[in-house]
Amino acid sequence: MRYIFVFLIYCSSFVFSQDVNRIFQQANDAYNQGSYDEAITLYNQIILEGQHDSSIYFNLGNSHYKLNNVAESIFYFEKAKTFSSKDQDIEINLAFANNMTIDSIDPLPKSDLLKFREYLFDLFSLDQYAVIIISFTWLTAIFLGLFLFNLKPSSKKIFFFFTILSILFLILSFSISSLKLSIERDEIFGIIFDRQIDVWAEPNFRSENLFSLHEGTKVQLMDSLQEWKKIKIANGAEGWTKEAIIKKLN
Image (spheres, rainbow, N blue to C red):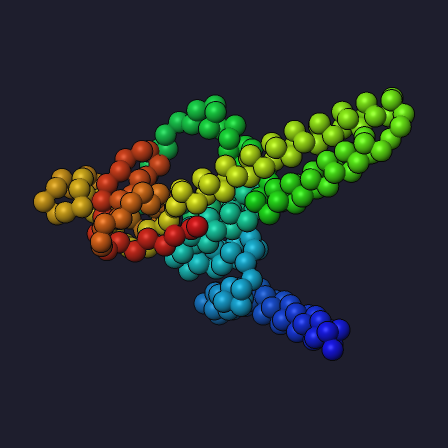
């Protein structure tokens, strides 16, 4: 009975995968034929089915870009980056989409330490770091076993060296992935979907109106108070906005 149950799960998963692939191909065909609204509907249908990867979000970004939907195209290109941070096509198309925005914001210069941290974070995704951690855990166990049960002194030295090396890489991988996960949880970014929002010094309209932002601008969500949101932009400026439509990226 158990094997029948497993077989049924396998069959349903296979059918589900085939169905998603069929919809994805239909969406691509619609895009190639210039039916961008239809393509968007089909790509969103795949996401509703629980499928998430860079190609789906990248194609969604392209479809919205063709329709001059500024905020939507930037949002989906940014989403695609979270799955494939090194993809040059995503970077190029995101740059084109950002050129459609009204706001021109010069980002703060990054320190060498911050650049190095971003380099380590971009090397692998969290899922890939998880695989690396599991791999080094197994390697550590194997080398430790070979060290303990090997009788030759020369071989024991070699296996001891590789055991220590595996432990060091295990600790390093775990530390990087933990820090990456912590920062991704704490740093919440979003894209403005309103045509224009006003940003205030405090969460009330009696305070100073600092500046205005427009659709497609990427902001960091810092805090919230009832209907007010505290945001931060790339140049370090902060302020409060009320009832703004900001779609979270993470």
